[in-house]
Length: 239
Image 1 (cartoon, one colour):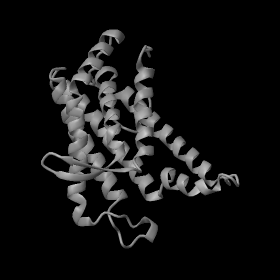
Image 2: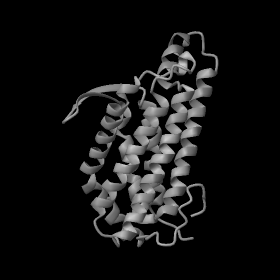
Image 3: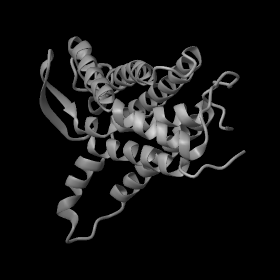
Image 4: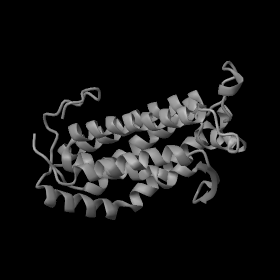
């Protein structure tokens, strides 16, 4: 197995974007989108799409097997961050800090339903994005990078948005009160569409940056993997 000069940097940026997105997702923002009008989105939309951009970079330059390793590294690091935040919240606060406990739990606390939805959506979306990009690269013989990055993002982000919103937010009366969700079922298509279009548009706008990073990394690493004989099993950790 050969070593790379910049793979650790790409991995670090990918994981950082993922963890930061999960922390700031608690804040909801109100913006107006073309065609869709006013929508409410989690603040994570400002950085989470960057993880998809660097996911594209990983697959395009280093191949699906390396990207698969980094996706699981991101999953493990996010799990560690969630565990640390939960333990920190459970520890007894100092008497003079106790008034801040509710704010800590409100901002950094995770409901089990949202946590499970987030983890599943991340794995489904990232692996679909990487798989589609790798297969399209072989099919196009490495041409039309813009079509591959945007096409894979459209599929990956649609799966991510659909899984997270459906599993984490839609109202389910049969669940306990704290887990029932806040999104009426009739609002599901609109919510999924808004997040999907925003994240996909973000990726499309960032295409020149993706080209710049990919081309420089290919030259610097002397690498340009084509996944013609790759095992695409997402649960295999070996590169």
